Image (tube, rainbow, N blue to C red; front, side):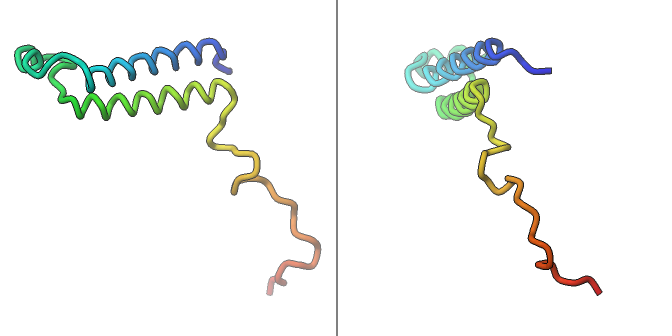
Length: 96
């Protein structure tokens, strides 16, 4: 069963949007004074942690969006896993 393309694109847009929000929290979010007063939920994380999580979300969202348009990281056209032609007759070592 295949996932419809519109659903994969929609989910990847949501993931990319949430990654952008986390990146905003890392760069220009609430001040450290507000963070110190709240200290609950996502505001309890440091800016550096928000940045790391944002980069991960953006990578996952980009990979999902690319796979929705046909990119397959496990089977590239001419990579190491590509099938090869059988060896010509008589080229193998004899078994003793």
